[in-house]
Length: 116
Image (cartoon, rainbow, N blue to C red; front, side, top):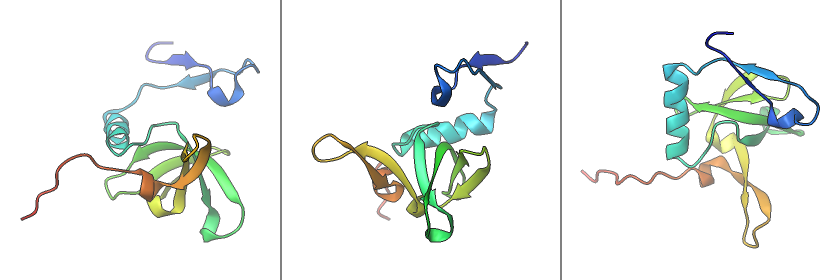
């Protein structure tokens, strides 16, 4: 297999399943770099509600789009782009326990913004 690498998916470790991952394109690398700038990571677990109501649906972050939406893949493998206000990620709470927090609150930029 030229140009591909085999990676054991973290969701199914122990089951012996192997996922074939193709090399990232320039756009995917740029999206992953933007994610790290705002404090998120590619492949990080995320949850959202379809239509703003109902059950929480789990997924994994893929990239940050140019319009500010976050591209993710749900458990069925379907890709979707959602606004950060509709997503939650797990972060340590006040006592160190992992809790779900809104992505809009978690995403932080560390660059100085221009005033004028």
